[in-house]
Image (cartoon, rainbow, N blue to C red):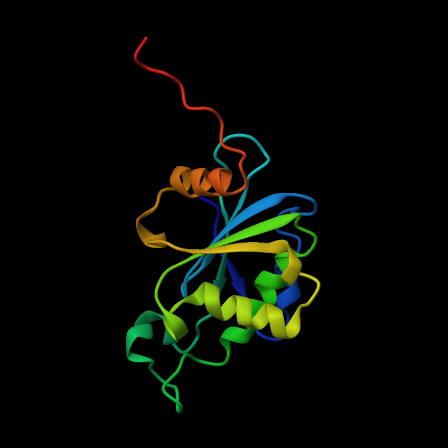
Length: 161
């Protein structure tokens, strides 16, 4: 796996050149610990590029407790993560998001809300948001979900012959 790229507050654009996504179909598996970006039209199972939040206060180690937040929701510093991810996805032909959880606990829903409010150029490229168990899917399964969503799946071989 590629080394996760930490997001540095105040300089989220530094992750923008990790991979070239311009014109590509992507699957992005999002949770509050990292985002994994998969290129679908590169052939085969790609190694995901990871974007992880810099977490100097340890908030992401205990998200279920909503530690350190006054309002009881997740830390507003996550906006830096969304900004970094949106920057990395600029120019993509189409994006499928995979997330899990409900409401505020679903990172993909929070990312979509961020994009709709702050990044209207990227919003039309996000064509789907599926709720799946992101942590239990392999890279190959994530790529296959994306291929099926975008009707790019290779035909299954007939093994009965």
